[in-house]
Image (cartoon, rainbow, N blue to C red; front, top):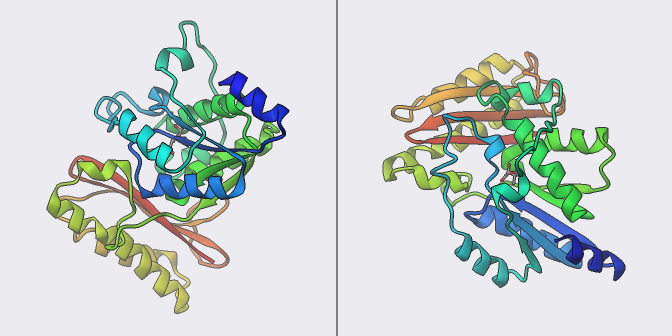
Length: 271
Ligand code: PAF
């Protein structure tokens, strides 16, 4: 990987990088297509990072389809797929941790302790190995993006970051590798998550300034999903991720909920 990167740099070719955990869907492909438009060489990584899963989470069952993903990558004219083993990324003796204050404790962090530390560690390693000019992430993982942006600024990592809009099914459901866990009825009802976000957005655009009222309305829509377990429904400051009481300025509406075996997250930004 390092040799290939060196050759690209010597030829003054710009590198676009899409980090992934595989199981490609339209969201991944949209990132790859944007990288293809903006940079000379497109590198993607496929690595299911054990450090970002807790013992109780779905590391073992996370969808794995390397051959299919490589075919899809070829179709999108990706120049290089980096798919290291766990042993290569974390050899015996690996001891280092990346931590960040404040942002990783918010939203999903409160329900997934250690998750963002694992994400930062692997992303920083991948940035160091691939040395991309531009790296691409999806808005569905908005908190991840904000944390990585902070890490890149704080640690002087020489990369530009792009966040691209969440890709949705016709029903509004955000595409996600974890949607395969949903049964048919759950998949239909999961569309309430986006419906709740849109309803929250509508209230704000119509002048509602009470976050409590917007949250209550969004929760009532999410609760219509049979058997749903809500982790959070919030109106938060889009930069600090801190829940707000009074809505003024740009806010993030964000939801995380468990439906059957899937934990789904979604969000929208309301300027
Ligand atoms: O968003 C993801 O798929 C992962 O968190 C990432 C950025 C590839 C790190 O493992």
